[in-house]
Length: 392
Image (cartoon, rainbow, N blue to C red; front, side):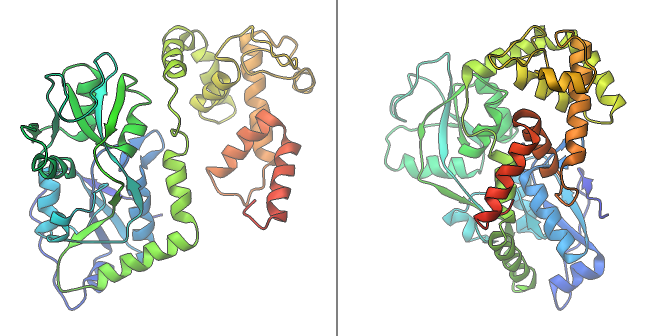
């Protein structure tokens, strides 16, 4: 397996030379990609590197048969400079395609559309336009597409002003708005979608742009070999549905933000989860699953209420039916330890029944669905999908 290596400190990187950049990359066995540490691009989770940009870059490097090397610049300014001076092959960093940037970089095919939005703290009065900010100040990342947008709008809006930050990333500015330290910032709609799950005080005042395009950026050189290969790659993942699947996996769970539900969830993490965490950890370790997955299922089922009872008769933290509890030899469904142990065993048994040729994480998602609605209902849904000539 090719493992991505992460370089956080830049040393001198020689410019790529040779008759063909693509051939040189394959010969060196390394694709150098610039990115940002962000929920929308690249981050480290419990299972290793993740993020939409990372997934696509890794997939592209694998298609070339080379190792992926990620470079994480200290600032957004550094990122733009590094791709301009050819210190890397590609910038995969959630970059908006703008007219100014198109003069400097060569953009790959568009993979996603976003909207630029003015963001404020829910405790503040919602501004209705850029001319009515109630004395507040907008702060944006210096040299970002957001600043480009403000520069363009300032030609139409008199006295429009803002503060440019060379030290903060977009996610850090969102945190400052959530904390009430910064009045307003501008964020891409996809960034806000992911961050709002944790920074629940953030709100969208209004859009400040029409839909904008995100794409990889490459140095504007005469050698088009890598650029043409990138175009070919995006055509392939768009045609085979892989791009849609990656975007759905990254954003499909955050389309609808529920402020009250999120507030309750965060409170339950502090007040309820500590009582049962060790039970989740023990049961998960015994059956070799991630305890957080079992805990998440338990929250979805009962909000970690050991005395939960549904109108259909399922009970306990893991909401076991009477028949399932009997099969698992769980005598008391309202006992937290018995319920969590039984629910974990039931999930593991269900996972084993899912077709082994279904790749992860889809196999786990299907096992979770089967846990909730029943294995045979899941199989019925897959059969209907087959009859409609879709992917089951």
